[in-house]
Length: 438
Image 1 (cartoon, rainbow, N blue to C red):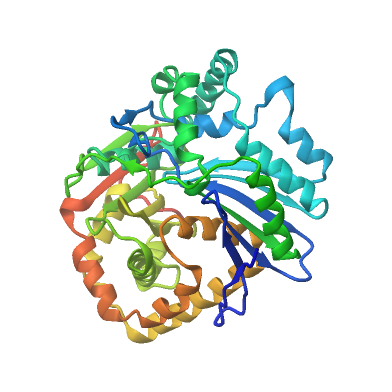
Image 2: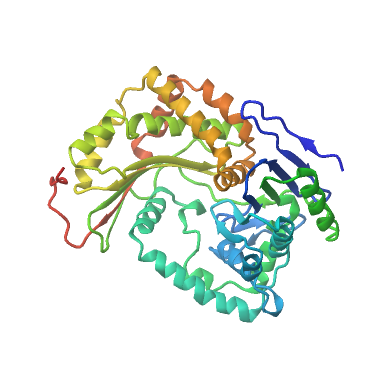
């Protein structure tokens, strides 16, 4: 089979990609001289995909919240007690998996026995095994995980904010679901989700390392040919209408923390984007927050000098086609004062061309450096791939962004109706107005 080599001239990389007869796309990035090989097998399926119409089905399906994460856990259990973790360990490799709002990813990293590890990864993802007994057993494990998250202040801070920002969009729900929702999951539910979302047409394999791309792709192609699967039509994902305003302006909770935790969020109304349009939105918002609240910004330094924040204060933007959200926060001795200062200055902080150009060069440098860290590279590739984004588009889109773009984003995004705040307070909070000693 002749495979397609893609030239990423600005990055100096030459990935090889091939869509197989089953609909599965395989992308291999040769990295000569690298000791480690990193591989992912990912599906465009995450926690928000609980309401959908499978290809060819007449009626939509609604499954319990948290099932994507539950399914990820169950893929590691195989008939006759076969232990996938143990098999990877025997090969001297590391394996893991994670579920996010829109994707589920299985991975391995290895310095040897790459062919055997690749076959083990294929077996892991392509052989579901769900029984009444092993599903019931998993419910107890997941329930403990959910309760553990409840006791983590940082997780509660973010979860409370998402519930405040969104009325209906399932992004407001915890990825693991709730104790009540996972208790209703059945083997039949898991098989429906697996057959719908784990079809090759909805998945991608990414391999990076000192490997021969043609040989890797041919090996996967031969393996997949035995399955005899054909491409399927796109899955119809069903989402409720989401109002532009937030569901709740403020959420506060008391937990055992040393200092109050504060997190402000802005819900984006510029959604429905894919491909370059979505990437451009992310780049614009990322640059905006770095200019306004990054560690080198005047506002950050003013807040720090007043003792309202520490060096761990952060701001960032995250999005997919169905949602977009900015979050900024951290520890503070005076949440109300911090909120007052930020909201009063957010609309007027200067956006200067010279600062933007400096940040663009920094971003480009970090992007190029991404190709030296295979784990981060694979994560970025999968996150972009399922949103119709080509990694090679980053340099040109980044270069074209102007201060006017950032100002327009500020006027559209940083509006009061789209803002909510989450606070975790200690049982005995410091009096308002007291800052940290410097």
